[in-house]
Length: 70
Image (tube, one colour):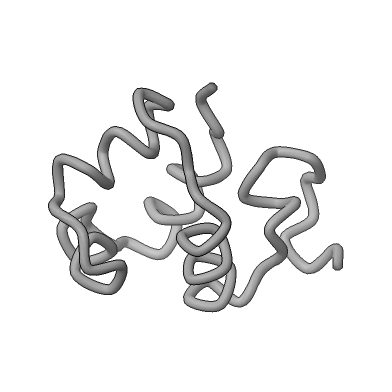
């Protein structure tokens, strides 16, 4: 499943995939696969991303259009 907000928030903040991959301690290729839905996001990765972007997990999962909706 592709989550458009996951890619969108990264691009809006002008961050490269390799930078996020480093934060998550995964390869750039693995992070790319998260964005394209090739591999599933784990709860641990979702929480790290939400903390990094200061947004809700629901926003990253396209369950809301408001990044601050908690």
